Amino acid sequence: MQQEASIEIDRPIHDVFDYTNNNVAEWSLTVVEDVPIDTIDNGNVGSTFRCVTEDHGQKMEFAGTVTKWEPPTLSAVRLVGKQFDIDALYTFEDLGERTRVTQISVVHAKTLFMKVMFFFVGLFATKSGCAATMKELQSLKQKIEDSTGRCSRKP
Image (cartoon, rainbow, N blue to C red; front, side, top):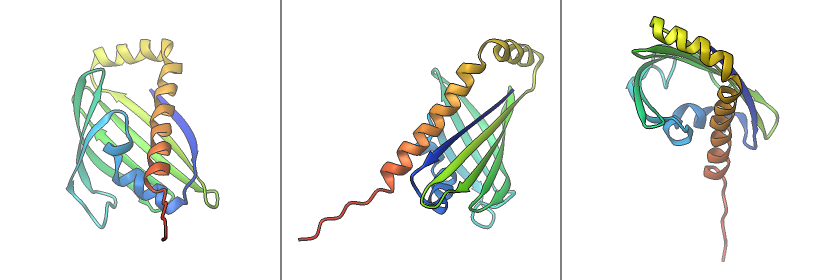
């Protein structure tokens, strides 16, 4: 099952790349923990982490590995769970003072039950899956635009 979505963010590419990759539990609507285990060269390929997600009250734990790292234009991770694995790829396109972020997620079912479930979910829930991916990116946009905004007052 694959989902793809894009959004434009009112921040420069370096800011968006750093925030997206280093603050996942802050902006994601499903990731509640994102804990580094072994960081290689500031997050480079081979770095590992533990990720906990929560959806509709159900928590799932994943072992994560960075599979691509090309700052500030590309990052990818593989999340390995008990019932399914996820490959998530993020591309970042420089639009001047704005950045287009595209997320492509591919879910790989491991069990026959999950494969059957994904088949039926895929038939009937493509729209809701795309909507969930867009909500994640909209949360990213809101958090980074709010968190990196600056306001100063001089006497």
